[in-house]
View 1 (cartoon, helix red, strand yellow):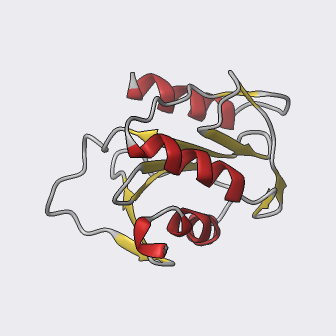
View 2 (spheres, helix red, strand yellow; view 1 turned 90 degrees about the vertical axis):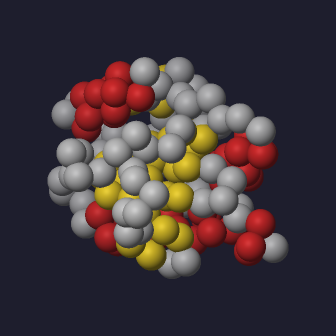
View 3 (spheres, one colour; view 1 turned 45 degrees about the vertical axis):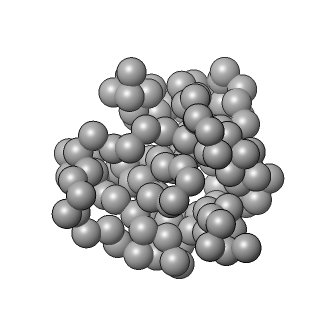
Length: 143
């Protein structure tokens, strides 16, 4: 299921505008409220791209540009992430970079995992820094 979602996002990256198809996740427990709050905090513009639309519509998915940046909130823990893996901290948020998928990053919070796919024309560190601000706001530690 997760591989299919990543494939849909990557296919969207190769698309040319319009509505982007992204499989929405199904957050559980406290992640539902956290992801709902995150949806209201996300920027309308990210690294020069305007926020777009995705299909099927979901409060747990956000895309910018022609799908060159896609966010999914409430995804499962990354399969490749080991308990001993070091996370890259950006803006107070720990990010896991998938070694098999260089465009795929997962924010690791105490409530929800937030997956972000960043297309090659964007600087991933800048995109993740801009997204770390709203992601950090949904953490109980930020309250």
